[in-house]
Length: 180
Image (cartoon, rainbow, N blue to C red; front, side, top):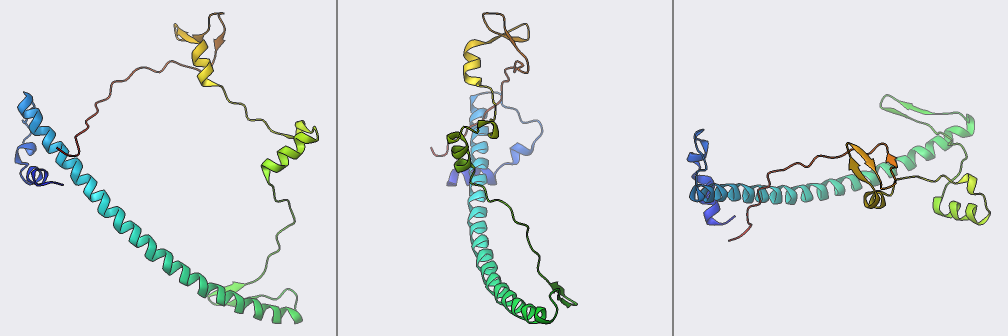
């Protein structure tokens, strides 16, 4: 933020007046200076927040990594103890007031590599086992169809259902310059 922008933000008593109005190029220029100063302040705040967020994320990641090493250490100790307990009782668990340790079997299954499976099925002619995602080719449709009385039709009179005309909307766009 340059000195002029800082000055504009510090001296904004006129903006708080509810009867302020842009009536000519001079007042529009003044208002754009104020607007640009606010946009610069937003950019500055976002930059500071991003810097702080990155340092906090780095700190958090280092702490989580340190905790992961400690958790892995304790998990190894629990596994060793549970293995000892299961020599006498195959269904043994470790139960403490602060938590339990047990095991769970995951069922057998299939690990899929979708692209490789599809290629294999196509090579073998098993196309009925392949899902095909159907989507409209909107670019080609727009070249051939147009709206007539709310219906999307082509020159041959074919009508496409599910397409409706989107009204044109005029939006106010204010783009202050970054630097003079």
